[in-house]
Image (cartoon, rainbow, N blue to C red; front, side):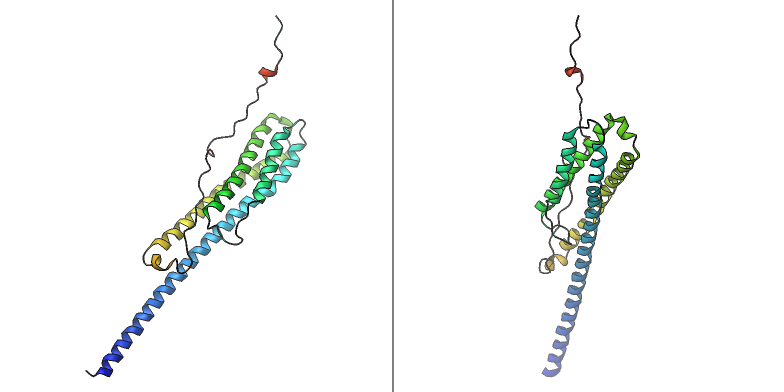
Length: 212
């Protein structure tokens, strides 16, 4: 076999290997982009349901303010918590890549959720408030939104798990960093989130002692 034929065969092998490697890298890149987009889409849904809750707050506060002697502190907690949510800055259009940013977002949303839970508990002391159609409607919408938040957070974590697993599997792990793909943080359970807010009304201690 002449040297020319050997060189031609060698060149053919190199070209074939280059095509295989190129197709492999293209497949890895396309899969990671698809999974990244899935996490971004899941994150958008999380933001949608959180925004819905935030949009309900002003109407809820206005409705509750109509109840005579309703605890001002409780309303202030809700209003301030909603404002703190708006101050959390996150990248636009993509899911968070910084665990600290997501933790700040979780903390602010957790404070708002706790304040709203406390407001609904306190509202139990006001039969005239609970009897109004506006309050009942808002309460139902808020409860439905809280359920959607739990669902969308779960779906987001599933999307992140799939993405994080993909970038750590061979051969993607060899090229993920080169393509700019890094692990993304999960939502975690807020400490104490499983406990209902405690609201105590100690009327007996404020009552005047009976005269003997």
